[in-house]
Image (cartoon, rainbow, N blue to C red; front, side, top):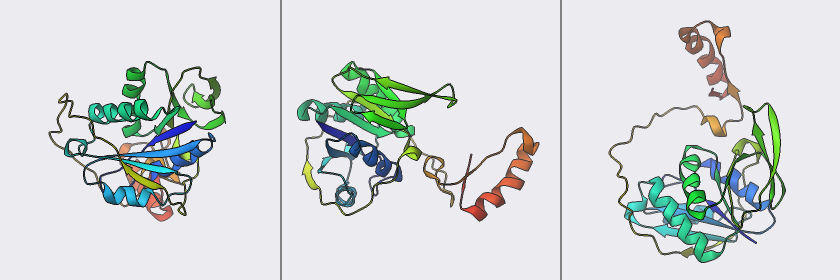
Length: 227
C-alpha cells in the first residue's frame, strides 16, 4: 500500500497544511510519497524531503503548473496515480484541496471522502456531518481512496526525514483555463485553517463595526486568527 500526498505550496515554500496531511497519511500504515507540482519548485522539494514520515518526494516541474490551475494539477495527479499504482490520494481540506481533489475523484470514477478528522483503518474514516454536530464513520470499497484532510485534527509532521527526491514527467498544459490575475490579502495573523487559537463572534457583538473594534485587538494579543 502506497499513499500519495499532494503538496500545497506557492512555488517557494510548503504551506503548513501539507505537514498535517503528511501526518494523516502516515497513520494509514503504508509508504508515503509527496507530489510537488509547480514551477521552479526545487527548493520546495528539498524542504519537503526533510519531513519525517516521507519515503519519496516526486517533483513535476513545468511553467504551466506554476499557476496551480485545478485542471492541470488534477491531470498531473491522475498521471502519477496511474503510473505509481497508489491506493490513497490525500490533500488538505483547504481551498486548494477542495478545488483539485474532486476533479481527481471524478477522473478516477471514485467517491471522494471529504474533511476527515480520524482514521480507523486503511478503508475506514471519521468525518463530521450536519455542520460538525455529528461524526460519521465511513468505509470505502473504492480501489483508490481520494481524501481531503481537516488539518486541525492532525499534528504537523516534523523534520528528521531523508526522503529521496525524484522527477516525474509533467503533463501537457490542458489549455482549459488561464490565470488572469491574483489578489492576495496579507495579514500578520495566522491562516484560519492552521491557527491554534481562533477568535470568533456573531450576533453577540452587535454589528460589523463592533466585530472589528472588539475582536481584532484580542486576536492580535493572542496571536489568533479571526473566524
